[in-house]
Structures are given as structure tokens and as C-alpha cells.
Length: 145
Image (spheres, rainbow, N blue to C red):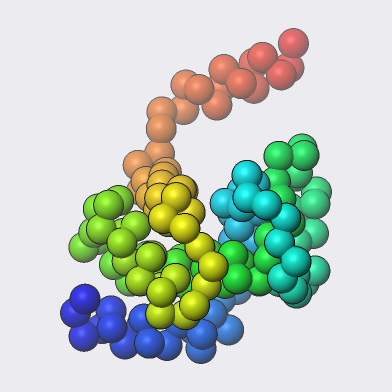
């Protein structure tokens, strides 16, 4: 990590407070996806109560209710990702996300880091490299029939 990245890494709890609520709602949704195959956690679910109404409205039964540690892992990872996105690949991002898990004593596994790094990179790619408009047009045609 360079000096700026290390500073961001050390200030993740403070930087989390500055995230917009719409980002937090999306990240709680990601957290529900990350822990969907895990055992039900008895940890607190304050993040879900505060930001989980988006997940409740789109959930088709495949998402779990994430604990606060999973939500915090997603938020910290999102912040760190935006700092290092142009300097990393999926594998090194997964390792960076695992350093969050170790440093902040969050109960996560490497599979969670892999899934989240894929989600973050896929969403980032869609922002800067939008697909052709053919597919959305076909969906609109199909839905209008």
C-alpha cells in the first residue's frame, strides 16, 4: 500500500460515516448476498434495520439478513476499493479486503472477499464500459408484448 492508501485504510471507520445513505443501502444489499449461504448470525443487525428497506423491497428470498460485521466489511471494502481500483486486480483486491477483515476483527472468510471483489469490479466496469444498447432494447420489446 502506498501512503494515501494506508491513510485511507486507517481511517475506514471515519470515512464510513461520510458515505451517502443510498450507497449504504446498496452495500447492505451486497452484504445480504455475501452471507446468503452462511449460517444465521445472532450478531446485531443495526445496519439492516437502518438501511435494509431497499433489500426488503427487491429480495426474492435469496438474500440473508446480514449482521453488522458483514455490512461493515462491505462498507470498508467499498471505500478501500475506490482508493485502489486503478492499482489492483481481482486477486490483489481480495487480499486487500482480507486485510480489512484481519485489522478490524470482522468475522469474514476469503470466499466473501472474492465475491465482493467480483461485485465491485463488475459494477465499476459497467459504469465505465457500458454494454451495447441492443440488449436493453430487446428487453423492452419483450416486455411490451
